[in-house]
Image (cartoon, rainbow, N blue to C red; front, side, top):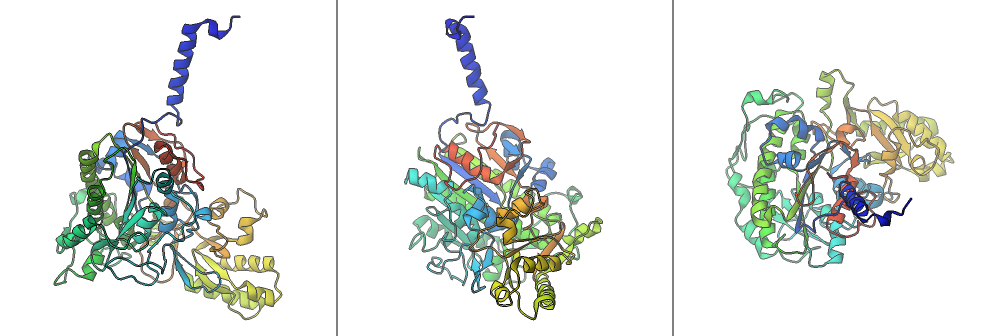
Length: 549
């Protein structure tokens, strides 16, 4: 048989076929670097809400991703405590909380038990706005780098900006070297902090001087579609809703003028997202984002959906309508991006920081075992049980990041075997109706348990020794932990309704079209964007490049 090189035509055909095959995989080369990556986060948007209302979407909002981009039908968070800060820290670092150090929105110091806020840093203050104790002012607690940090180290001309209705939603995606701006609920303005600068640039000052929030004073949030269009969601004013669970809603109703109460009320409405997107437009113009060959990153975390779902539940008509309102806002924003940046110059990505559980009362109405597990009562029952076994004492010190801090000094003083203590605490906690599993720190760091133990892998991705609780508690499906009755619904569990989220991509030069059914993780976004930007993945990233069509 003759060597292959004796057949030049055949060799050329083989080469072309190999090239085409490589281009059909996730390793295909991208068409240069995008001038701008626009990274959207819809706070508290479960995947089910994107697909359930698909027939009611506008042609160019979410549908731009679904019809003309790539979307991943089986995308998940793989850590257990699915909350805003942990999610926002994961997205652009590609790392789980056991590496980022952001184990929750807040946790308690392991020695003093004093509260620690995920982006709290008393060394810095908000610019031209009041700074409350524990306010989010810097990324100090974030232990790893983001895609933006890697990009700016490779080219300091690159701009990385994070914008959100929440401090954590702006600060964590912006990383160590970006710039964050967040909505101030007292003033209706957007502000940065002295970590980033001493004074705002002129475009921020001009935006705030125009008082854009005031235009929504007495504005009505009315349903976008006729009443019959909401038959797949729950009617307004259900008994378990928070106050104001009915449309239409008048912003600033009962108030004489725009003030702190009015400004704070905008976030749990479509007007909060509209304001955030308007500020993003101002940032694009003011910072000339995407206007040259140096790539920039703009992270826009839209907070309103989370507030609405907490107050009324993801099954409510208010949440349903908000998805549709946001869809139209995104369509208008895309039109502006196409005009100002150029439709072939940017990549857009959309995901969520977590999903949302159904309201417990709604689950019960469907015949599920659902309910509310009261945290103070749980700690009291645990301390009573441990005192009965080991002697009177405050054995459980505090609730922290969905777990419990234990007084192991007292355990040692009473000469109680630590493993026996942990097992007794687990036994007591499992008598609570709303708790399905309990892990000790030893369970997460040792090899006593089988690797396929339910929830174990998700819990291990949460364990950050200097900050984590001593006992990790898992809520039973359709049960929620609460300190007092306030929220209608919540998130923060390792169950599918909390970790199944959208991952959507758009950018015709870099992204094909179609649904992808391969199971993927949110940590995969960071290395995918890094590859598009021709920089290495963030050093702590644990993800892999997404199989984009």
